[in-house]
Length: 94
Image (cartoon, rainbow, N blue to C red; front, side):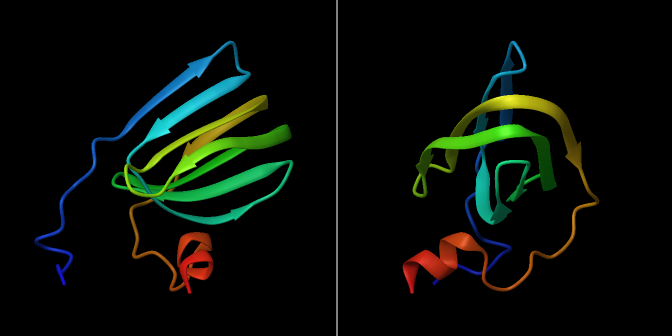
């Protein structure tokens, strides 16, 4: 098993189209999501997306790619911190 120092780092990119479609690469884990907010962890820290009618269309756990749509009003990075134990990915894989 790889430790965090030797883990392969995923490239992290955001592509926002017309404030309606968002593509993100480098997603490590999803903490929570609902119609108004998605909180996820990336190589660059915790990322919070706020909006209305948010919907995750595609999520690839292996490549760390996520696409979503809705009315996106804010994309905010928090300080890079240690992620909480047991995000959505880890709950799904148990």
